[in-house]
Image 1 (cartoon, rainbow, N blue to C red):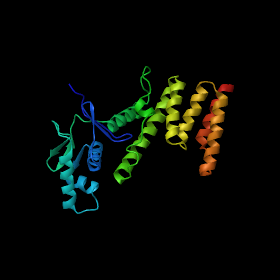
Image 2: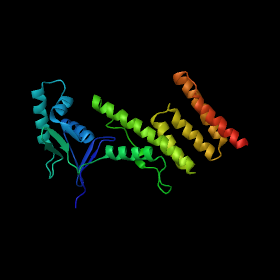
Image 3: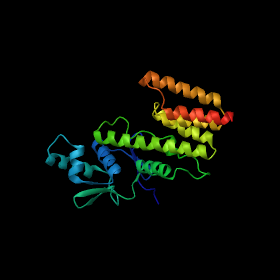
Image 4: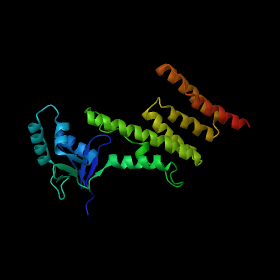
Length: 237
């Protein structure tokens, strides 16, 4: 059996059907991307979102033309359900895999001891970089925030499990995504302390202090300072 069709929206748009990558026109990409994110959408909402600057009649005509140009298959990638359109259940969308992974980490807090950090979190790309439509920007920010919260939770859980090296990977993935995010830097410091690397923990803390002062003219939160002070006091004891 051929593999199910896959829609990749993290990074550059790509539709894979069987063993081939299918080329789509720009409107076809926009339509499939929007449907892939939402799963089921009213025709009027879909047409108005993708073609907002034309009349409703013109927008619905553009929608019909774009749907007709999509690859044929059984079942079709986009099916009708009354006045709504829905994505074929067999279509695998990478955004939903990332969302499920991130929510699983955030909700469970402690991954299984034998499991490695999910690659979708550590190596994740932005949603459709270069696309600047409002619906893309909103979804991109939602996914970015979800991924950051999941990385923070993952780093904390791995530190509790006594796996500071893997915790460091998760923490640095969060730092790379958002360099001014304090919770990510706290996780880096906590991982250093868990390994007994006090000098590296202090160096990272002071580097973050300088970064915050240069970029925002603020200091780290009392929580961060208290974390470092308490951990160092525990070591001295």
